[in-house]
Length: 130
Image (cartoon, rainbow, N blue to C red; front, side, top):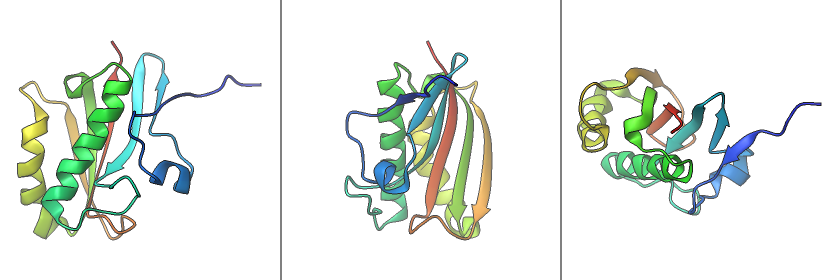
């Protein structure tokens, strides 16, 4: 029998965690593995505008990091997913810069996708626990 997962939930959970049956983050081996975060309102619906989605995705991410005693400064690896990156990458990356912090930056991978359940942007990270 394996040990239970050490799940982290932010103070303000949005509805997608229960709806899609996943944990926002799991602590393991000194690291925090954060599920992909989108610009979800509390009811799980997306913010309509791309810039607002990116801001809210980072706010949701920062809430999870804070619940684990971390901040974006502890993030070591980032993966972002975008629908139509040709049209959205530069705008999304400009908004992300407000949350990114100073160099040295985390590693980053951007992936273009065709579907994000009604969202245009998603960010997933691995952070080092304090």
